[in-house]
Length: 356
Ligand code: IPM
Ligand code: MG
Image (cartoon, rainbow, N blue to C red; front, side, top):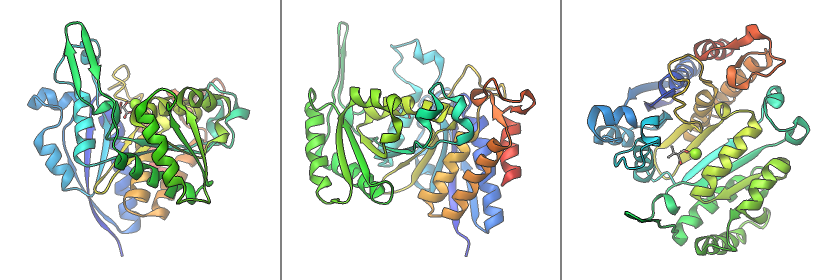
């Protein structure tokens, strides 16, 4: 029997609307083909929301989010704020607030490698081939949410973690490692930071409950280096909010482009599915954005959010087929790409629908 799910689409800023359009179209097609009823609503967040309501996360958006079964998100951000450090209301606040309000403490960022894109990366194909990493980035703690202070000549962002916050993300990561390659790397900076020493202590404790999983603890500076030196050595990586933010952007280059990476933010309630790329205002409205990360976010929604494995696979394989047939958006094209197969956002979205 088909499922019935309410999905909230939050396109946000920049290329957000262009890419979520295709994520949504894929969901509609899957719904029709598999007999699921997906109903959609839309809400504002980020710069668009600030312009319309004065705040980056309007109450209405939060209420709709809480009432939905899953959220498909685009991106937030605007150059206007990037060069104005004094702006008090900022687009990113909406994203941080919704993560906190929905209790989305685990951000899963799979580094999925499509063989066809090995040449699109700036790293050597032989270094990349066979890489398959699943990042668990803690998402509701750390320096992101600690107390902030500012006077004219002083600024401080408090970095803090509670034991339970580390424990619950560690458990999620170990549960995944158990059914994957049985290897977990916990990344911290325990040689310097007290928060990292708590992190390591808790992960060591949780590790005892998973004797079949091989645990490694790695300092974040070393992890940044190992990721480009030998990415194949990683299976599941679990790390704190800030380290995870940085390392996953770095790891996106393993997959060829930021435009390819999807992510799932989960907690105990509604899941939130989004590309890891940002609002990319430099290419917004030009039909240049890569819609594949949004489409792959939908695959994560189907699998992790709704438990629909077969449907999720169908989506991933449609993306794979489009790539195998040689189609590329500009960000993943290389010198060998047939020029006639370099597509804009719409044509690439359409291609994936055809292969579905
Ligand atoms: C991400 C983004 C966000 C973050 C920004 C937009 C606040 O970089 O989701 O990785 O830092 O978490
Ligand atoms: Mg980031």
